[in-house]
Image (cartoon, rainbow, N blue to C red; front, side, top):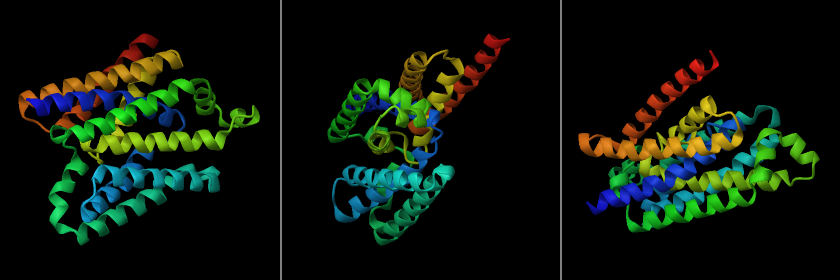
Length: 262
């Protein structure tokens, strides 16, 4: 059962950082950045297999490069911020498909990164996820006031003298780190759900930003740990089970919110 212990550790760690970063992204109307960077990261994973290099490391490098590209395009098309996501996602999918055709022998291994394979986490994966968690939590705690202002009013943050460009890049890099660490747990096709659905649950129930931060982590932890247990007992796909559980939580959160407002 050692593999299940590694799955629990990896899942518990990513359930802190992914929903937390997702909250900032949702509030900034960049919810789709998860899908975008996940596809870019998969292209890096494919290249890693092709070069016989640790795939997550190459995927991480690709995701960080993609985050810089998104930020550059977002500044170029300020009125159409979502355009940057569509462009980079298209490029990521195109590059991934090209690399897959060049290395047909590793397609089966690469599938675990598309759909998630939390039970195959290695100790190297755990250390990578733990390192990402430590970096994200440290940066969020150190810059919590600046991130709060940037999230809710970027123009006011710029006027007040906050280095907006620096913090935008920092958020993009942190998001890239989290997504690269998460794709082996829930898969590139589902990673966006782990970023956005806990945030949606939290925003439906919370009355302040502090409550939202606490709730988003609680929802993420319960969904991941309970999803792993249910998947283990029922011999189900862990990633899909976690996401469906999150959708169930969202339905309950929305219903509860309506009752509270009535």
